[in-house]
Image 1 (cartoon, rainbow, N blue to C red):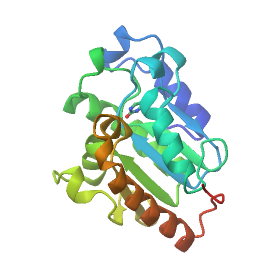
Image 2: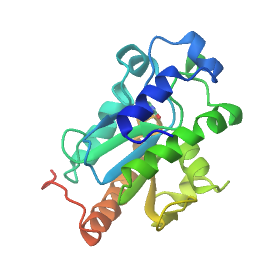
Image 3: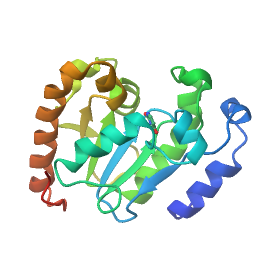
Length: 199
Ligand code: URA
């Protein structure tokens, strides 16, 4: 029922229906430019995110920031960032299907309220959950897909990206991520989504 992103954040903070919450320091809801037209959806907070209460502020987050900065996107100016899950899974394990389903209505409402022009899903979990597919991330990355949801006036263009935590483990795949960023930059321009000059 949240009418604004601020109300939605409060609703997540007050929510008692996810068992992950018992073991965390902070809720990690969202961050970034309020009016951004690009929305990045990641997986779940890690240790640094839990400590700071902000998404993508640890090592993977720093790499994500560097990646999108190359095409003139930043959370200070034109990107809004959230996750599938708002509480850190213990030991950074994968989020469970129940946890993803529990958090899904909050994400759906964030998308309705934010109405981004472009969605970027980071990694397998966000991509599969949002696009309702079991196809692998290597097959879907860099493709121009469409996100649909009941109540949205039109599908939202969506491009899956390799997760920055994966790229930290497999730097040899960074060239693929760079190709995908070029696709993202071109689609931003096609959609008249503002971005800076890039690097
Ligand atoms: N990985 C994610 O998917 N999200 C975060 O917020 C941090 C790391």
